[in-house]
Image (cartoon, rainbow, N blue to C red):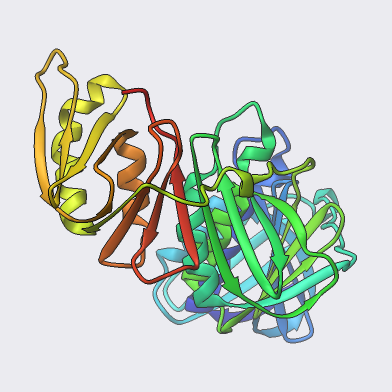
Length: 366
């Protein structure tokens, strides 16, 4: 294998491909990126046996071939090279990297040991704008359970209803739902994707791959995201996602409109004390203001007022301040609407004048 490519293209490719590398495994070859040169392209493949990423760049291939090289080492080394031409020469399982002012050799592992990437037999699919998917990931994935005995709650639910993709996550204490316009829907799209996969997809979208649309392909056990030269394949989580629609309140007694920045600042101040009591704060709505208080802790207690527009009854609710802060941080609006019902009913959080996103938080005992 012998080829020449640019440092910039090589560095970007390694950054993208390395996102599927998991160094916490017992199979050494999974720490490596598989490199294959053929035609006028260099293909990069990585996998942790749950997620796989395939990417390619245009190169001047003088001799085809393949090898696997430690991902962390190669990515770090190439990142420190000057912008310019890089020559790659593979002899056996060793790779030489040559530039105008440097030469190094990195030891690899035979490509024969690299596991095959699963083929996704299409049963359903859709296309979605990159900007829409990035926003949806930002507004949904944070509510998924990262450490749970219920694997289904560690995923993001994808379901297409009436031509729109609903993305949903919940850790049983809070829930996010985002509705997104999609196109070219085919088959029955309904699956649960590991939240870690969605997070890595978001980071790839941030890096960019020269395309404005993501194609999604689903099968019974796998899902594939195609963005330009990037193909990301992931296993799906087996099981039935909770019937989340029955959890979302259909009405409220009190609607409160507040400035997001003002409420966030109040919560940050009051949460200094609330942290000692599982982040519990009480919100009391009356007379055009919200009074935010904490119970007395070993460090003291707090009480802050914030101006608000209130419709409906006077009301009060106890919530986890950290959950509320995180929800506010993912709103795409300067104004937030809190909808409160009974003291035991979930609180709905929405961006003002927007209906495509809803977040709910389960209340605490007052």
